[in-house]
Image (cartoon, rainbow, N blue to C red; front, top):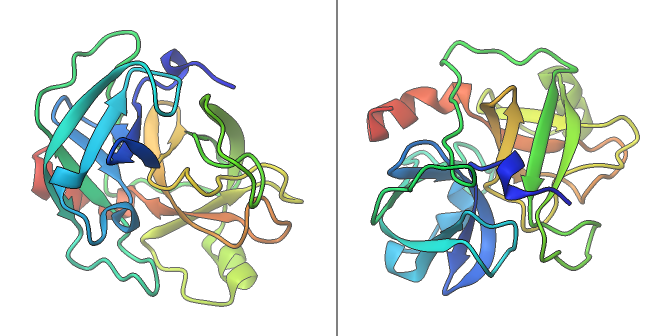
Length: 220
């Protein structure tokens, strides 16, 4: 378990007040999450709960005025898996609410870079979701190793991370949430085979590869 003050950019993206995905505060007006979390939805159905370590209680709730889902999002490949959510009122920054830094479009994450993933997803494959925020340190994995593992299209918009032997990983309910290195958002929880399975790292949206879209949409 971790406290929201350790990851104050973490939010819960909610569908009719129920947690469906994680997200990250990138400015006082925008949250970034995964496109597969918003596909087929509109802002009237969704809210953002923030400033709390609990999945569906505490903190504050803000509405969403618009969803900017990447126009090239491919639900089959789960490519370009990013959405930007414009909130109805600015986030009040403080100890429990902060923005996460963004990488440049040229940033690369070498294999074995330490990163921290957080969220309210299941703590084991096919398990229930915890009420309290969880987090784990994992390591980035080379694109070639990830391609060897999945034997399918791992694109430059994807970043792989996990641990040898599995053990710690993102899981169902963590989608859209942050993968962070030194207070910079490296990845967005996207997809994977199972949770923590040996030989199958988690796959994240590579924020540096999608940085130009964020800039174009938000001005950040």
